[in-house]
Image 1 (cartoon, one colour):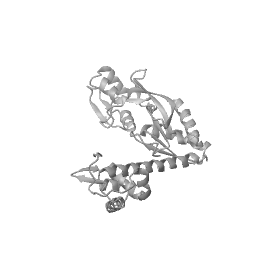
Image 2 (image 1 turned 45 degrees about the horizontal axis):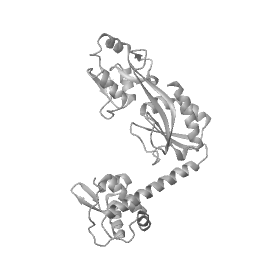
Image 3 (image 1 turned 60 degrees about the vertical axis):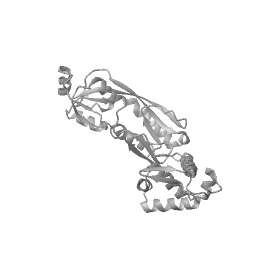
Image 4 (image 1 turned 30 degrees about the vertical axis):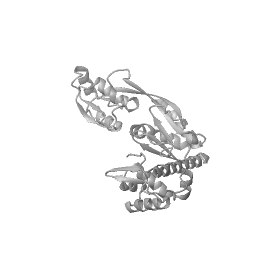
Length: 306
């Protein structure tokens, strides 16, 4: 989507053209819809993001342009170009979105009860096979906590409160985020006894379990490319849970963190093939929230077993 200025189609522009002045004279829902439309690039995409109808998006944008007394964008084929006024209105919408998020973070930070929901973003394997079995120790001590896992490989936005705390494999550079080290995660090449024996006898022909194209640049994928590029791959998945279950069933060799080395799996070598740092990351506005503090302490205790 292009966001470069184009000449306004109307010779009459509103007198107030600063973001603050425009925000004051525009409806918040219309501004929010305009920002969603620019982000999505289409009426239907904005409607899905806001969970409203296509007609609602169209009506709000028409009302916004009427209140501004000038067009905010032009449509050219599949592209959208902002007018100069549209760029200013978009800046106002972005500022109001950030103020709303800041208010949400402040309200969350002011909640000093040791109860309520805390949402943790992590990978499926860490959430399902490492943290979930260790939850009873946390909930026995703090029974009013409500822990929620947002599992996947995509980074969530802590600023937008998509999660309260994220477990990441690299320390973030954002100054608004606080990172606490959780330790290092050791990865071992492993398989069933039969598969490991086959690998030791003929390393180039032994099948592997690996990652799909969704995560091409993570260290695990790069390790596979460097050490097993010529081996047949019997399963590809970005899910370590799927890789682990396939390796346990004898599908092939897999590079797995130590906490996934079930009795059915034997390391091919005594030393790890890869190590990755783990960090607990949260927004600085939440640093005084007691439930975040006790969950951090629980995570640090859990990660002693890594």
